[in-house]
Length: 378
Image 1 (cartoon, one colour):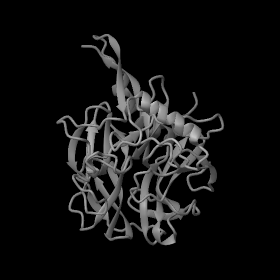
Image 2: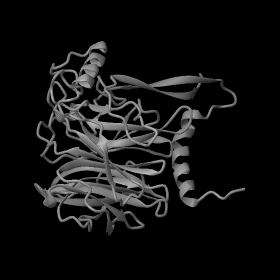
Image 3: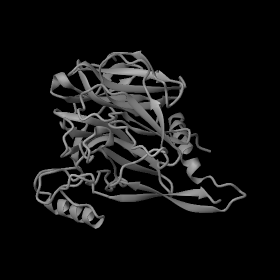
């Protein structure tokens, strides 16, 4: 019998923890199919009826529960004011519980982009985030917790990254349990770099990639089959029109990376798809160009991205027939009718589609879509 490599066991263990609650059925009950609706044209609410306020973060699955991390903007209209990090939990991606603020006793400053992974060696949940004591003198901070909901205690106020002024960043954990931080270096024209973290995930080894791109925000890194994908958003500054998304691929997390197209393009040559997306929205009852409901789609003839949002994460979800779904997530800045950032919509894409060579197909606006899962009958 062939041996299973240890790093594969780590990956499949994480995935199995999320799949089991979806598919295990009691012997005394008959299975039924349950559909989880992902709705992109209505606000998401928690179990108390409040709009979910977690922006520019990530969606993770730990021990069979989903956790949505982000910034809690509340009633603020200005994205540069100090706001805490929030976390919501859910057993099924539809019933969300507000678990409170995430970070314990943070120093004064402006905080963005919380990303959490679990370190199997230390048994700690590790949080990396971007913060500014003074705008825009960027730093990356690190905190740890015994629980995915915190409180997270800061262990590294200024991570030792190679970049002198780190801006937007996000975490990636590979199948072998090695973690990486991908970020923009503000002082170097917002260049993007990937760095390998130490065994505790609390600092950088300073082993890193070459610069992947310049003039970018909200960089993401994920792995599928034999390719690593870096997704780069253009400088957006919380722009309501959204941002383009360039794709770079490599066979190694530290590169070298090569350009592999754009999936949210605004060249002016994409009116055919823009018109198609507008028709899709109209069929869902949306009025294009109105201040409500969300404005995630481009107007006909306008040089907007296909999805008018700024990317924040690619979540990996269990597919009903086995395997993994890759869900691209983006914040629709200033999409709420009352202009309160805490009410802004977040777009959760239908599963990304990949060509046979691994290239990602362009994004398409999906008003609503469903995840099919097995559930227990009453």
